[in-house]
Each structure stands twice: as structure tokens, then as C-alpha cells.
Amino acid sequence: MKKLLKFVVVLLTICVVLVSALLLYLHINEYKPEPTEEILPKGDASGAVREGDSLRLMTFNIGYGALDQSEDFFMDGGKTVNVKSRQKILDNMQGIADIVYGSGTDVVFLQEVDRDSSRSHHVDEAEYLQAAYPGCSMTYAANFRCDFIPYPIPPIGKVEGGLVTLNHLQVGEAQRIALPVSFSWPVRLCQLKRCLLVQRVSVENSSRELVLVNLHLEAYDDGEGKEAQTRVLFDFLKEEYDKGNYVIAGGDFNQMFDEIGLEEYPLTDVSHFCPGSIDTTGLGAGWTFANDPTVPTSRLLNEPYDPQSENTQYYMLDGFILSPNVTLEAVKTQDEGFAFADHNPVTVKVTLQKMQDGRNQDEESADKR
Image 1 (cartoon, rainbow, N blue to C red):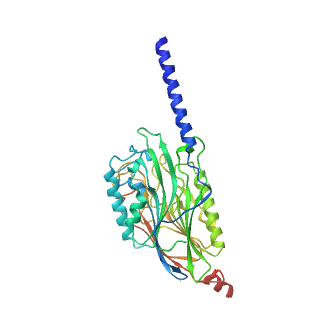
Image 2 (image 1 turned 90 degrees about the vertical axis):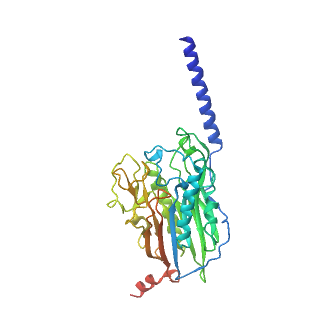
Image 3 (image 1 turned 180 degrees about the vertical axis):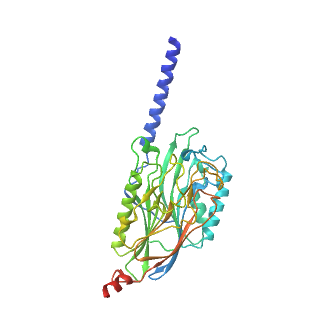
């Protein structure tokens, strides 16, 4: 018994030392981005935009090229941690690239784009997609950077991924703007550091800018993180609009717009991921919240995709926010059957209203009346 007790004590001591060493390593190497960081777009794009022009934009969470229709995920009630095949990543990326290239859009907001991660077999997906979308620039902002994520078993391992915006318009400036972190130490060490990826495009013959905001808000929190990040987002959008700029934000909100989509896709099992709901009145009058509930934008990864299964859960998480001086012409969720990712892409067509003295024509007409 003494020998057994001694063995147990030694074993526990070794475990404590190893865990402490791992925590120390992760703490020292924790990704700690600055509140605002300048980003240099890669590649040349010469497209121009003027008042009155129409633009097409897409938002697409690509699930780091791993979450196709045959996959589940342990955080959603499934079993899979990392896909086993690099070829599967490449096949999915080809399918995603075909969707992006075939969209005919001017700007593409992408989320969950890996650059050097164990879970996606270290494929640089940002470079892959830029090469497949000629004539555009590529801007990348990291929101998930960890040398080693030790959970579950087998572990996730190294992750380097984030947001990518592909743009055919000439970008003047780009920034990474940090969002509030939802988790405390030590959980924070291996969690995403969410952000806004902001691009600024000069509007020709005008002092205004087109401000493009790519985002991916918190997912697996208690709800407070999503709300805090949404408040920062709203404050930023209002500030830019108050300057007279055109503002378009798009991405994966992990929330519904005023519970739009809940009737079409009711929550059948609240033990899994449950999205929050954004109060769209928080931005004030005139703002447009655009998504298309005729097709779900995402699915729960509790099992491989089966549209006939009673366990299949759909969500409306992806869309766009448009400032009052941007007119929504059309919005559509493309039904890709979750073939290459656990989200479907959403596209919009918008028009930049012609402005007079910093105000749009509707406001001028209202003053005259």
C-alpha cells in the first residue's frame, strides 16, 4: 500500500507540474492584440466606387474548410475534433473557391479562414482563396491564434485563423479593431480574440468613404459576450455614419436579427447552441438589417448533415447591416446544401445613395416637405 500511495503521489505531482508548465507556456505566448492595428492589404485591386453606384457583396463562414456535410463537431454535440484528411480540406476549399468566384460579387467577407492550423492540415486558406479570385486584394485579421489547444482528446492543437476580406475595390486603409473578450483566465488562453476587420474605400468625387466591416461575433458564451461585442459594433457603425460615410457590416453574428428565422427554424433542443437575438432598434431609425430566411444560413454540427433527420437544427446567423444612406436592392441566402461548410453564403445588392451636404436625398426631401 505504501508503494502504491507513493506511486500515486509521484504521478499526481508529475501531472501538476506538466499542467502548470503548459499553462505557463500558454500564458507567456497568449495572443494579445492591440485595441487597433493597421493592416496592409495584399494584392492590387483598382476598382472605384461613386455615389449612386450599386455593389454586390457576399458573406460566408467557410468553417476552415473542414465542416462539410459529412462532418460533425464535438462543441455542437458531435464527436469529431479535427478531420483526418488533408485532401478533404483541399476538396472543400475548391468547392468554396468555386462559390466565391462564381458569385460575381465586388466584396467578399469570409470568416473562419485558417492559415496555419492543425485542424485544417496547415493549408493557407487565405492565399488559396485570393489565388482563386483574380483581380482582388486580400486583407486578413487574426482572431484565433494559439500554439497548442490541449483539449479535447485528441487535442485541437495549433490554430492560426481569422477573417478575410476579398475586395475588387481599391482599399485605402484597413484595420483590425479588437472586441471585448468573453472569457477570463485560464479559459481565455485558448479562446478566440474576436475583432472587426475594417476596410476604407474612398468614394470618388466626394469626401466620404465606404466603410466595410467584416465580423464574427462570439458563439459559445453565456450571452454577455455577444451583447458586449454587439454594443461595440453598433457604436463603431454609428460613429462612421455620423461622419457622413457609407457603412456596410456583414458576417456571422451568431445571433438573429429580432428573432428573424426563429419561426422558420425553431430551436428543437436547447441543450445545444442557442443563438442570441439582436435588438435592431439599438442603432436607431433608418438602418437596414438584411438576411433571407427562405434558406437557413447555418446548421448545428451535432451529426453529419441529413435534411431528413429530426435532429437537424438550422439557424439564421449570417447577414448584413446597412447604414441609412445605403439602399438594399436584394438579399439572398444561396442554398449550397452545406456541401463544403456548415454555413450557406449570403449575398446582397446595395446602392450608395447620392448625398447632398452630407445627407441623403430622402432627408433633403423631408426637410422641404
